[in-house]
Image 1 (spheres, rainbow, N blue to C red):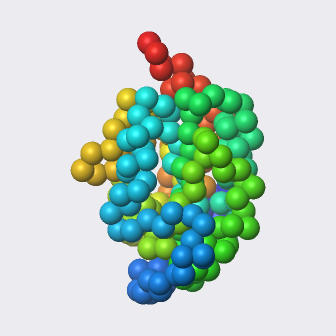
Image 2: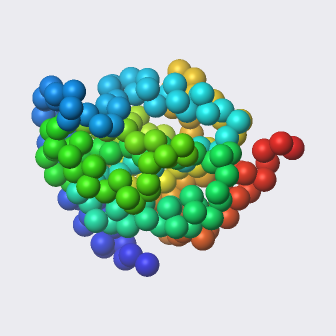
Length: 206
């Protein structure tokens, strides 16, 4: 269990690093450097896929590929959730964002490629690159991130009936590893997160 001091120390680091994300421009990337779909400020590609997968339980995981704790969190989700529930009624979207270190779009893509084995891509797992951290910026206020920090190192689960309208939907259940003063029961716990996903899967077809 992380201590409160550790949480706030990590959050302070994130706040400082965020200034780089917010102030830096987006550098064009050559097509061959884009193995993952790149999200813009509207994150429309993610929204479209989310709604296309209506009727399924959907996970949204927002990670920085340079963050070891984030990568550990992705492994927790893979082992406790994706491997446990081998059903096409469960899908996951992994969004890579640059928060801890400066990463232009090309570097973010390259860093992300190093860690695709965390949650192996396939019919149930889709990866996105988000060089502006816009997914996190939209979800920061939704989950109550302080100081305008984007949501990152977060793990969202959405029920099968959730739709994405004019604004991103509130997660049905979520956990995090990013500190920020959230309650201890929000700290990522693989078995507990898996149990909440199981409950959401059980509701499908009722």
